[in-house]
Length: 156
Image (cartoon, rainbow, N blue to C red; front, side, top):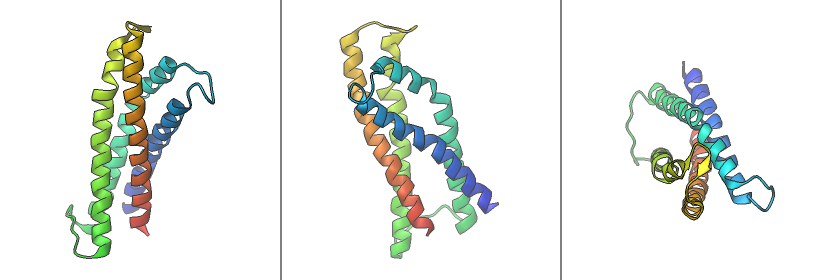
């Protein structure tokens, strides 16, 4: 059962984190390495929303289940260096999860409102909102990478 929980966590995180990091790179490289326009990149990212939600849900469920099967509890402490490192990684995971909520609601929602039915109502506002989204997505991708490294370190 523990292996299934770990597989669920890893597969969910791979399907969530991999595309998230790829989109952050794609957004930053727009106009330099490729000629795909910004609205197209964001529209495709938005279409992945349900997949991101399901993948992150699987990662969270797998992580919590794995934690419970390994320790028999959901407590964290800093009694030992290993326990403290574990607590920091789980705290970073929580920050990443909160960042995902902010990304979805406060960073992406203005873009949805400005791009209805494939028509952008105000290009200047859209570009300003897209810049904020791109900045947050880059920060979020860095959190995703940090969490992935953190979980890999606490498993060894």
